[in-house]
Structure formats: structure tokens, C-alpha cells
Length: 363
Image 1 (tube, rainbow, N blue to C red):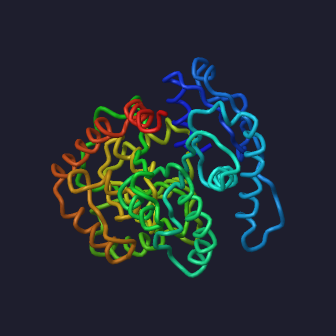
Image 2: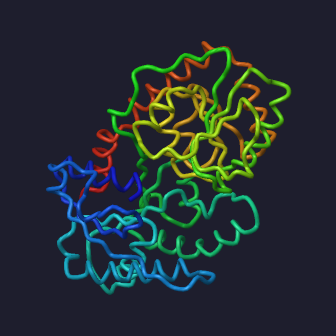
């Protein structure tokens, strides 16, 4: 279950709003048990698992299976449609339902759709990534145009949605957030050796290869001035062999991960495309400054007060930004860390965000 979906369910339930949760299960957990929710929250969440159909792999098989899945969801919901006040769909799950309402075959409450970051309309590295994104563009555009409400994180995501022909009046901007209990009150002061962090899986669009090129170019010129740490599954052949570059592998335990994160100074997020990165939220809430590419809704989080914006995921631009950070004094970086914590606390905590969302979608 994606973090954003989890927090929506959790905080709707906290506000005593009943949620019928329709899901397919890709983990080893039994979602019907709602293991990660409190007993009080469980009273308001009613889960149903509708598994994703499977087929042989061929170009477009994901789209076909998603459409079939959306039809199964529609058939399940059809007898109860008149009882809902709002239907919130993620990705392609509402595809068939939205088409049925748009064509006038059914009547029901407003239906909203949320495509994470509309990455298929953002710049992507390489020919293969570009071809895959082309398959997704037409259905995403049609679903967005036909939905009653289209959810956006804001920033460049809203610009993309508008470019698809969605009316401004149909767009609801609502950022993602973090739970207040996970925001630290203090940060680790910056020392003489600056500690950089990349946190995430290896995926071509994440810009790890460009980051690796940038680091290699810095090692001889700035040796002894910085360390770079990677948390996440990075392939062996993509690793830099150097005494100041560290690979910690994947850390699944949330508390261990957050404790580890607090040891660093600056998070690097050099992606080609993003929505509203959880990794930036978590880094800022744990007292890190952030350097990130200007993609998706990143600028809602990162500015000169809390970090550095990189124009795009280009190795030279990443290297130049790293050199700017290395030239900064420790006091200035610590100021950014302090302001990062404050920004998350003021603007991006779930108990505030959910109240705003409820007002925006309440019938």
C-alpha cells in the first residue's frame, strides 16, 4: 500500500469518516487485517481486496490488466454507488467507473482521480523509458479529462494537468505530508567533512548514474572534504569504489532508517521526474538540507531557504551544485537544516493537510 493511500485512510478514519478501501495486495501482509492501523481507526476502514488480473507479458499488458482490474472494481461497487459521498481513485483503478459516469450510463457522487506525478508527461532518460511513457499518455489524459476532480500535488504537476485540457475548476491541489511524531526537534551539526545522502532504489529516472558521474568528478579535487552515503539497493556494477563512498543497502525498519538519516547533512535527489517525493519530506523532517532537481512539485518543498534547486538531472549541473554546497560554511548549512524542520512542521503534517482536503472534497 502506498504511503499516500495509507495516510489518507488513517487520517480520514481519525476524523471519523468511513472509508471503503478497495485494494490489491502486492505484499506479504494481509490487508484485510489492517495491521498498521489503530483499533480506533479500524472501526472506520472497511477493506476489500480485488486482485489485479494477470496475463502473459506483451507491449501494453499492464494497461490491459489495469483496465480489467478497474472493471472488476466497478462491478463490486455498482450496487453501493448511491451510498457514497465521494470516490477517490488512485491511478487506473477508477478507469471503468469514470468512463461509465462520463458516458451517462450511471449516476453517482463526484469521482476524483490521482495519478502520482504524471511522470509519463515529464522528461525521462533513454529511449526505452520514453516508449513506455507513450503507452500511458492517452489513457491518463482521457481519465483526467473525464473525472469530476483531478488531484494534484501542485507546482509543475498542476501545469501538466492543465496542459491535458483539464479545467482549473476541476483541479484540487493537496500536498503530501508526514506525521508530526516523526519530525525531529534537533539536527546533527555540520562538521568539517560534509555528509551527503542518496536514499532510494536504483531506477533509471532517479538520476543515480548522473549522480555517480558527478561524484567521480569531485573525488580528486575535493578529497577529504566530503563523504557520500547511499541507502537503497544499488547494483554492484553501479557502485563507486572509494574509501569515502559508502553503500548501506536497503533498510526496511522505519525507525532504524530515520535514525540513520539524521547522521547526514544534505540529501541529493537528482531525479528526471518526480511527484512529491516522500524522501524529501522525511529528510527535511529529520534535519537535512536538500539539493533536488526542479521536477514535479519539488519546489513546494525545496527553495534557497532549505537547500538548493538543480535545474535538471545533468551530471555537470549536479557536480556544480555539489561544489556550491562544499563551498558553503557549516553555519549556513545548519540554518537550512533548521528551516527545513520548521517548514515541514508548519506546512506538511497530515493532521493539518487532511482537514484542508476534507473541506475541498466535502459534498
